[in-house]
Length: 247
Image (cartoon, rainbow, N blue to C red; front, side, top):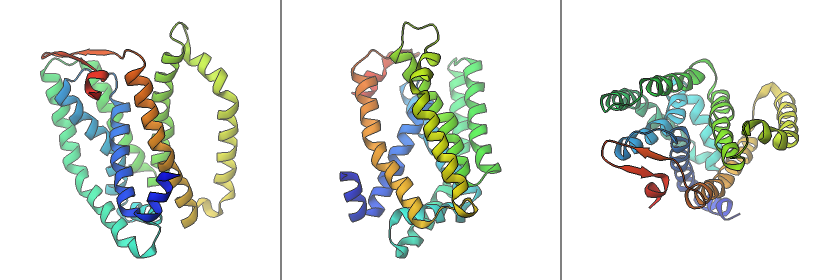
């Protein structure tokens, strides 16, 4: 409720904060188990967090601006939304060059070649989502099939550490609500005229998502950083953990 109230009062500020929080959250989730060293780790977090936001802006600048405009609540702020989209598009090419530099540095300090190739492949696939699909469809694919599945895997291993197949156990418990959600999503998808979201629909979905994201990220931090020991990553300089990063 507090997030919604603040969003209504200061939509430009809250949208910017939401995008920043998304960058950090997406980046940390996508790089949670990589031994990059502390400095390179945070640079990689920024790279992977910005990638699913800058790619749609680069390949479909106008459409991305149109998707951001309803989140500012006032039609008069449409130009600001378009400006954000242009800014994201401008960052895309330097971001790709930064990614190449990150993986080159990681390989130079002795990073495992298999992991490096895996991360490069993931980055390319994320970009391809937005090359082949619209910004909204590409983001849904990234969020549901990449970000969420990786988070589910992490949660399953934490909830059922003694299970030989924790994902199967997790799926059994999550199946009823998951199937119900999928059915409702498919119904909404085909029910909407021409599969298009109205101005109000985008506001409800994305501002509601922002309102849920803050407690979700805080809860994730409390659970995974404070309530259990997390993987310790060995680096040439020293060892550090998520708990160290949090401090």
